[in-house]
Length: 270
Length: 317
Image (cartoon, rainbow over all chains, first blue to last red; front, side, top):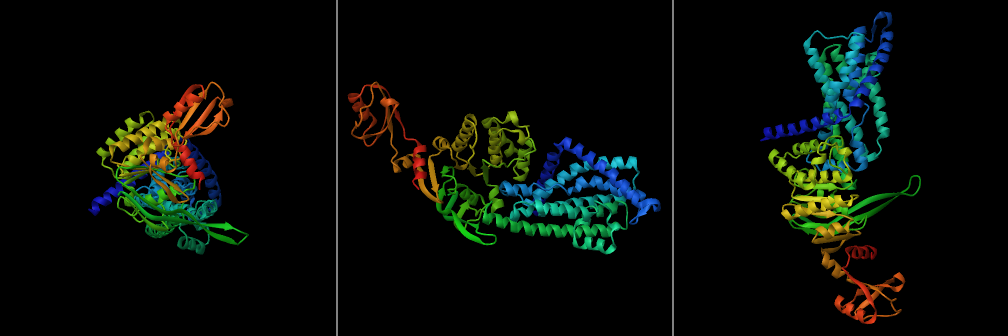
């Protein structure tokens, strides 16, 4: 019985994720424009980092091929993990449309995270492929010899997508209290960008700061972790374990905040 | 009883700013002791002026708002704590909100709803087929929801609310902003749905034509309280709605002329048109009397209008 229930629940989640995939696939021009922008910025970031590496050919423990990979795969993952776009949640809380979500027999968090996972899958097939392809042709990328590294990379990206989704869900949930989430959203974008390795590889920072970021924030789990797994900077195990820990923390946190937000909604009204 | 409320009450706390830091707490009662029972298969019209508490009542019945006091039960469930279970048994259409996925073609929204509500494919297909023919959906099934006209969207919303075969359908102003044809389509559909007897319908509206065309039973709420619960005829009787006789005359209506059992309500068109409301006399008696005292050109008898009663109800508060 529980097995049948679980498989039905899984089908619902898959259907919602599929809808998320198709929703984003309807915006083709936006996909093309986004991939183009990611690629242009890829060149800029790559030249900057390579000049940091300079004649030594090394920066923060990454060689030139690893740095190029860090930049170009990072540019590809940017739209997959999707730091910068908020979920619809905040807007729907503000407009009151969240009531329609509550009237469906589905958990709110599951709905939003599954939809976002569908979006990420679409981005992986489109927005990821373009900058990575261009980077490979223009600079040559670091490709792990061990096939297990690719599998670890896939797992790491999947966890990064869900953690980022949950973080943005938390940002959206603040709308239950604040109504206008722009302030929180700006803070999130700045912190997530700087703390995740999006602007530069975190090992360029002092060790204590990197450790602090890993322990105290989910940000390195969003981008630095999958990129380090791919360029094989140390063993993948601890990186994946760190992500798993942050996944657990964000799930628990999102559930607690969701419960409080919904209680506030059903008592105070929309 | 498929819906039952007793002494249902909802208070909202509002904070009024008095100064930079000082705030005053005020409690506003939106719903103030509503007792309501709705039998299976009934079509209930639920009306009231803006801010009367209609939507608040509906939100408490559908489980998105916790009552401050009193009881509510829908399909034998307590809405807020059992919201997810209740969601499978009710359908809700809020005229001003959408439950469809904005960027997806309508048919994909429908098939996603089948998964979300875990409806067996055959049941889903049968219900969709029926809605397609009754609501003329075929022309825009493949159109993304964001491109639908309001009338098309409302027909789609009705379908979406019914695909899981709910026992109760809550409609909050489903005809708001619709043109005449779309209103007729929606009303015709609701009439048919009601006729099958499977679905209980609770309809809130500002369009009294909806009520006259569809509802036997009408509940009027004002200031959070039920001020009328009965048929439309009972409403007219309770508020002494009057039938009227409108007469067009060949010569002007003599000033100060009165007729027994009727009173002059209006004299227009330089005295050539007079409107009499009936106070005890029948229309026939009044017409007979009129014919003796003035030269008649044309006559019509007007039934009392629900709008007038309701306007009196709302302004009499």
